[in-house]
Length: 82
Image (cartoon, rainbow, N blue to C red; front, top):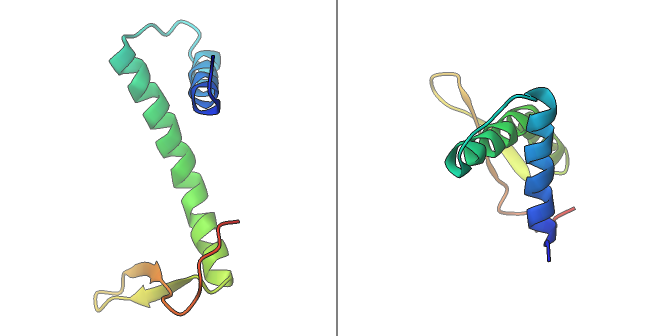
């Protein structure tokens, strides 16, 4: 029986196959396909998620001396997922 997690990974494999119809690979290679797609998705979604959490006050932005920005948890806010 397939679990929700297995179905999610299967959907990722099929998404890769839709864009690379002649792809062939080992289990290790297919694992890379799935990981790479998830990484690409995260690169696009993480900035939006960080902005969302900052708007809710759950993350804080900190500017380092070199001018770069880092983000951290706001310890004064309870964390609710959703």
